Picture 1 (tube, rainbow, N blue to C red):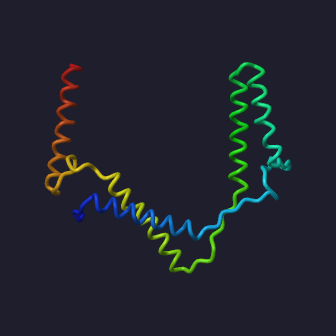
Picture 2: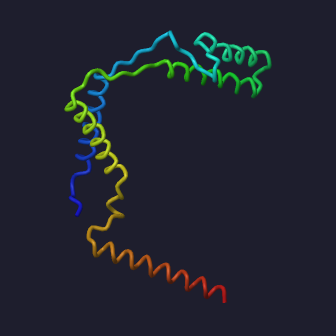
Picture 3: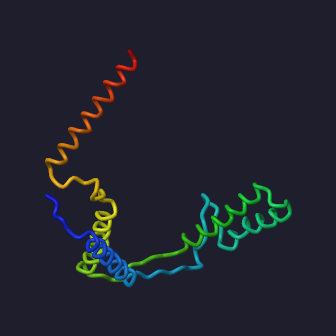
Length: 159
């Protein structure tokens, strides 16, 4: 049986849990980026960060030289995408030393808060939600009767 509660309090409580959990996690994570080893590997070919700029530069020159053809815009867009992927790939994320208690606390706050938010955000609206089990069964029977009546009308039209 579902407990009735104030949805606003559930939402605010879930939001607070999620924010606090993410804040604690952000304090326990070290983000770094390095020049060495940065770049993208294409099979056995390694493209350094400096070389990653070349497709973007070619795309810009091509776009200005051709007056902005569609293919030059696509090439420039792919160059920008390659730069973004290179930045993301060269980023390293490390967790600092955590006790098991801290790790469980962070996970409970994040996923418990997300669960409370999901419960409120994806719940059926109250006006559509029957209050009692008998009401739900009555609605199901009415829906079945409507389906049967529609089927009878369809059969009558076919004859």
